[in-house]
Length: 215
Image 1 (cartoon, rainbow, N blue to C red):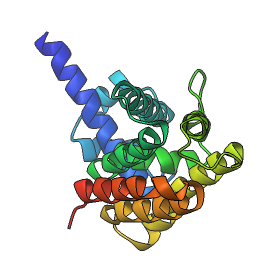
Image 2: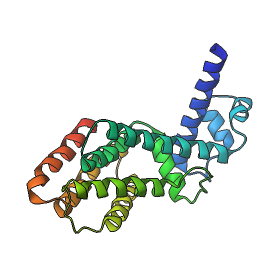
Image 3: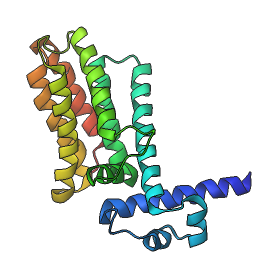
Image 4: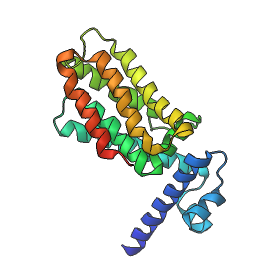
């Protein structure tokens, strides 16, 4: 058991180191030697867990996918409205991006054109699926205007989520991301949500932003 635990800890350290370097330097500019040095492990330890750099990238994408699905399941289990669940999923992901490098590296790998291996679903497709299902539910809940184009809104939402991160990484520290996310939601809520229901969701986004804000 102790040996297995050490192996799991080593694997986690290698993934964290690779994610940090992929996020800061990019996939192509990061070598396995860089990862070995950053993780403070031997090359043998790295090759025991990962045969190639691409395998590390795929592991990061798998963790990213699993984390997103877990967030969605958690929000479903807590009985939130469809719109609140969607908002909370986006802020949950923002919190993870602030706290650790794996979500940030996952996005950079995705927009960098890394091939997503089967059976993984492309991260943007996963986001589109979650957003579409939640928005359709929100229309049924009467939390959104009944005549909105759900496909168009889902696509715009996912594009905005990605764009916030891409633009933000060049101009601002990652700790600013929750504020930008709240600003995005305030714009969307004012355009999509009927007036009697807006205050609830505007207040929610402000609350969630404050909960993960880092000075």
